[in-house]
Image 1 (spheres, protein in one colour):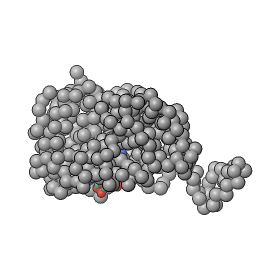
Image 2 (tube, helix red, strand yellow):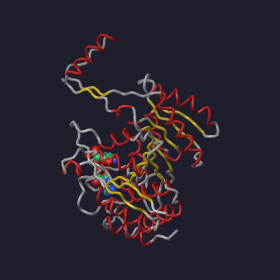
Image 3 (tube, helix red, strand yellow):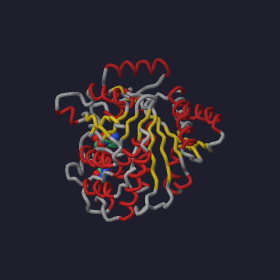
Image 4 (cartoon, helix red, strand yellow):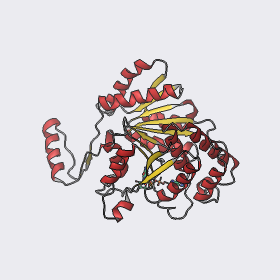
Amino acid sequence: MAHLVTLIPGDGIGPEVSEATRAVLNATGAGMEWDVREAGTAALERGDSTLPQETLEAIRRTRVALKGPVTTPVGTGFRSVNVALRQELDLFAAVRPSRTLSGIPTRHPDVDLVVIRENTEDLYRGIEFERGSEDLEALRRELTRLGGVELRPDAGVTLKPISVTGTRRIVRFAFEYARVHRRRLVTLGHKANIMRFSDGIFLRTANEEAEAYRDVGYQEMAIDEMALRLASEPERLDVLLLPNLYGDIVSDLCAGLVGGLGLAAGANLGWEYALFEPVHGSAPDIAGKGIANPVAMILSGVMLLRHLGRVGAADAIARSVERVLAAGEVRTPDLGGSATTMEVAEAIVGGLERD
Ligand code: NAD
């Protein structure tokens, strides 16, 4: 059976790691058919928006997408393509596993973490008021009227909405995930003592929902304490349940614990659509050199294959990746080697067992 999947190569190192990933997934014989679409700089250069309507419609048709990283210009008027995709398709759950891999030297030997990040609310909801704008002036006046708050005239403002509805579904998702994947402990990170009405909702709703999942361990922790624990004893943590911003930051921290961004895969899931992408960005510092590590995107492809029910093909790639990394001969420079992106892909293809 063929699987039609939308492929968004992205920009920067995106096209390089996408090509490598496509080669590996094709080589499993799982019958992949790629519907290639643009987003980000690639679309902009063609005179389209950074997230063309036809790309969104393509994902709505195939329901499954594999995406390379996309550059978001810093501090400009551009809305992040990634944030827009997650909101347009209501991909409310990000799943980002980080596990120690043999042959990759790390400070802590037995890390096995999964970040479950709420993907649609919080400070990433995109409710922003630009410094000096008329809207911000109106907001300032309203805040003064409502609560006597005096915003500095040269401030910009980003709002942080967290709802019971949005929290409930991510909490249930995290516990169901823990059950299905036989994980022992869900740890929720928050700062509810300071942000009582946003993180407070996240914490209280999770505490209520956790009652229905007594078979899974549950604890809550201030996000700063979680940062300390991740640095000192990450092997004692398991599933990390986080609101959007903390989830973004902690995902990179966890990737760093097990060998870096070149290895960190991810999924963005909703009720209707699924989009798989590496945690890393477009890495402009190494783009075009053919030396980006393709493993993060290949492992995102493994998550995609599992989602499609192609467990045999997924396992075959995962085993081959582990063998190639453990052997240590074919590695990109981020892991201390001198291999190119395509050489790593070819080594992984070479180690595949057909399912
Ligand atoms: P980045 O992840 O692109 O790079 C951080 C560092 O990690 C760089 O030194 C880079 O060379 C290295 N790196 C990342 N991926 C690598 C790989 N596969 N192999 C080897 N080295 C790798 O983060 P950044 O520099 O903060 O962001 C660059 C751009 O990417 C920004 O515009 C940002 O908004 C965007 N971004 C996009 C996504 C996405 O599309 N999902 C995610 C994060 C950042």
